[in-house]
Amino acid sequence: MRWSEFAEKELIDIRNGERIGTASHADLVLDEKTGKIRAISVPVGPRRFGRKQGEVEITWEQIKKVGPEMVLVDSVRKGPFIK
Image (cartoon, rainbow, N blue to C red; front, side):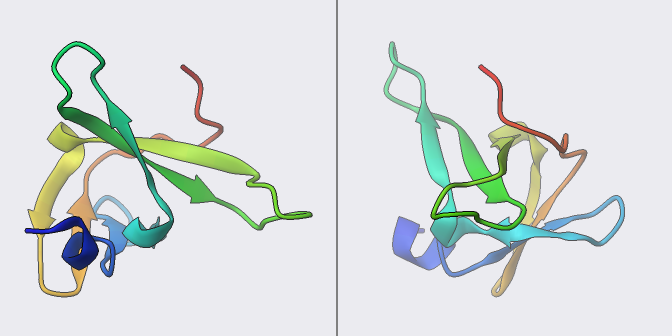
């Protein structure tokens, strides 16, 4: 699957059915040593003055199913993205 196809999908938390966001607004988190995608970082909350209010990092292990219109994600931690 190409990123352009993945980016069109909505991210849904399977624990509560809540919409997390869309992959089109996500940033990729890469492993510097291997070059592999480690996670995606999705902005959450309203934007103020063009700035994101917070981010959620979703690891590939948390992605449970990629469907035709949505991606089902398990146990997403809410709150600002902290490295």
